[in-house]
Length: 333
Image 1 (cartoon, rainbow, N blue to C red):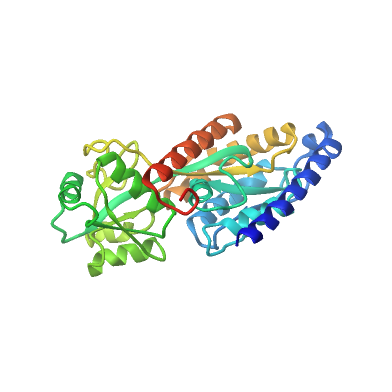
Image 2 (image 1 turned 135 degrees about the vertical axis):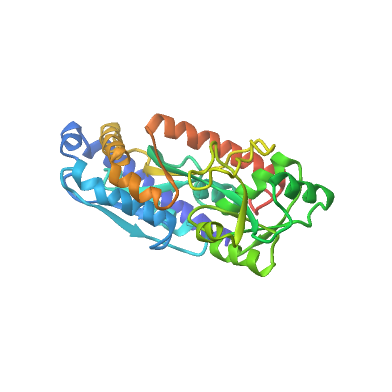
């Protein structure tokens, strides 16, 4: 495994050197002025139909209107390792000319600290953030827990015994639960499931007391009363659930934003980065994009290249510190 990772890193380094040569000699202001004059391909390291996929397909719906009529072609590169293969494919096979972009999200940053992978949270050139969504903690509809404080109180009385389901170790839902427990000063029993919907099913079958999820997972069950949302890890209450408090309102001061955005390879000409940033801004501000995200209970949220880069850097540090201090994952053991 270690030898294979070394080979991948060498191949990526060679690709990066070739990219730098290209960037130095092949891109000029004229290329930026004409950009894009052919389709832009977007690597999404998750399967078709996933939340990551749907966000970029919402971008694709409006992109041609602001990009000289050129399409935004979503290229799914799923794997069973938390999006690693898609990122590696992007690193090894992308020229820094702006015609292939990568969806970058907090799950990738988590993965870079969870295990030994050939990229870091800051390996790419940020272009723009395009959305944000937030986790929530839920219990079964007939659970004895009516509030977050009751749930936390149970965890304090029984360290490591109050089970919270997630969508797999080292994923966004798992990290949200870790952030919640550390802010509350408790220790949960984290139960991994193949995905968020399965964790919701676990609530209904009694396999786990709580479940950390992100919309649209479990929202239909919450509306029907099959599950009860105790609190959201968002800065404000969910529009669809105005009576559910945020974690901070419930006495646990934590927010966990699952953001997604667009990045390019390092070495992409600044003029191309700027041009694409401006196009993405118009896409995010398009009402059609907002309507698509509303159906996923996600928020259109634009940050420019500089601000998005600052977010990535701060989250990279926050995630590393959390994983190290919680002694979880494989990378820092």
